[in-house]
Image (cartoon, rainbow, N blue to C red; front, side, top):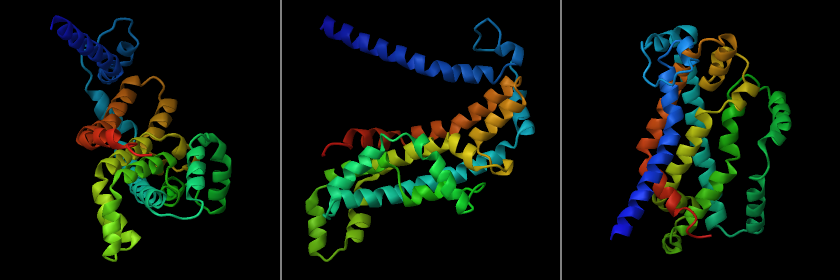
Length: 276
């Protein structure tokens, strides 16, 4: 009994230690957002600054158009999330539920593309989008999510779709249902945990995306929060308090999304891959 208590106590202490290590950067971010530049670079470790500089948050709206950048980021993130959910689920259904020649080979090719660094495709994609006249628009950031999907999302959804009993699909076929009806009325309603995982991953991916907007956007009125922060840092290298304040505001949506979707997120991770 004592060994069990000691073992469980050790596990809890280890988890608290790991959690503390993970949360320390966030606490430092919040603390720095309430400090003056001199306090930020002080040798003393002080998580509760004295005095607390709340004006960093108000000044952030004066130094950069935070609301405009937030609107742009929300627009791109929501559109890309919808695109990945739509294209990813359709392709995953085709790989999981429809028999067609070359299906398994193409699925292996799809998995192989996950090992391809994104930097390899930057130049050809930029040339294509330039010929289409899409540079300095949101099209290069949004349209690919509706047309191509993300290989990892397709793999995740495909594995989850395979865990749905085939008897449901067979019964629907007997009743005269088409593949699209099976997909929309049976598979998708039963796959909410996996779809929630894809939605959370896609949201985090595009909310924090810096490289894509940096390459394709030139007009500062179209900038996202990540790109706007980089421009602000280059123009005001000494305003670390304001930079940390905007960064803290930028983290709020990601934290809220994770907490509200935590149930589906954990359930989807646990259930994905039950069947290969």
